Length: 501
Image (cartoon, rainbow, N blue to C red; front, side, top):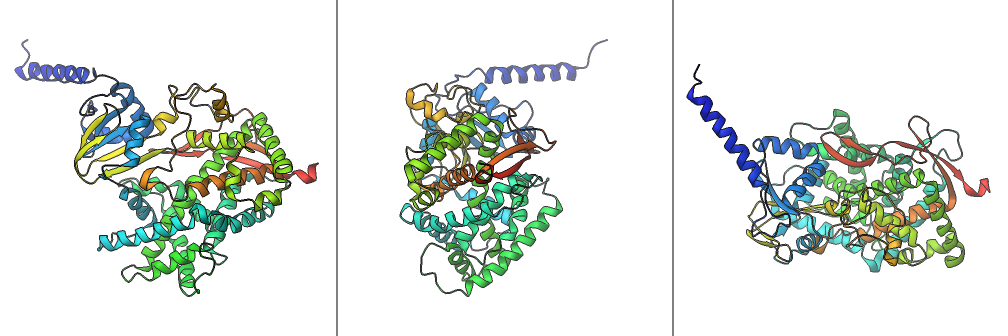
């Protein structure tokens, strides 16, 4: 029986399509082309969107293997350029051609905070610029000790008074770290009138923040309820802050100055004021808290690493500073010195492994985007550029055993033992004009928390099943469909060392 003509035509089309798809992958892997290679999907863009959202890092790693460190793909009708080599990322962050915008990050924070679209976009941009300038002033190096002073006192007080110390009951590591850092930073940033009973609501919003951006897969109703509750408490704070006299110490309570600035805007509704403030809180807290939780999770799984770090901290406190009180009174930059090589190496290792160091920029004018060497590509207005630092940080070509946490990785680098071309990890703090304004203080937060915690307490970790965490590498939580870098639940017993000894 003779097959219909359309069967032959269909077969020919399928063969031609697969031949084109196969040949499109035969491209130079160094991506030294005038135009970055375009990822050719087996099925049109809706499937590409699903694959991207299902596993962002896995999708980009597979594309990098096929197309090299610079490639493009189409996402819902928009072209996205991905760059995952160090020199290209450096060019993107510097943005010497002034063709890339950081506005997407603020729009994400506004969406999570529940800020309605502003009719006067220019006025909204000016307001955000003023807020960022105030944050930059607050966290500037010359003011760091002024702002750090109340934070240090608040942190040690919060740690010493945290419930469940010495009790047989376990406490969640995420709650222990998150509550202490959240309360301490909020008190030093916004003053004693800030509602610190909002951590549970803030934490739930943070963990589901990605899903606020999903058009068809929004967070559960309880998360929206938590956001309404938190914004209501922020509204009370903003209203009280607007009535406060101007702060005499400049930076100590910058949160009050921000609240006044928001209240002075005639076109902002109370809900939008609260949403913008919530977005700033997410920017200040989310990554820092997450990184410290990861750091402590890794230490709880490796007793040897924790003991070595504790010995270093004890030696530095007793010999280099004389006492913990002297360390607390020292300027923040002292913790970045030679007294804490293991600690600073561990901080870099957490930055390398545990935060998605992905920077997204929107193209504001069509141009040739220079990526270093022979790497460049043409980008059009409305395209997006992803500087994929995680593609370097988790790559065995650059870091030996890239998926393994090594406390002393960046200490060994000084002796030339590190099999890596790049001795500094690329972090989520960004770079260039859009460098995170609180970068230095966030690193100081991490160091200070670990120092105080290991100096004062002995920590014993357990899984949710009551098993010891020793020898168990902490795993990441994934909130489908987008992976979230947050460790699975670990519980900890907190015992004071001075009592035990």
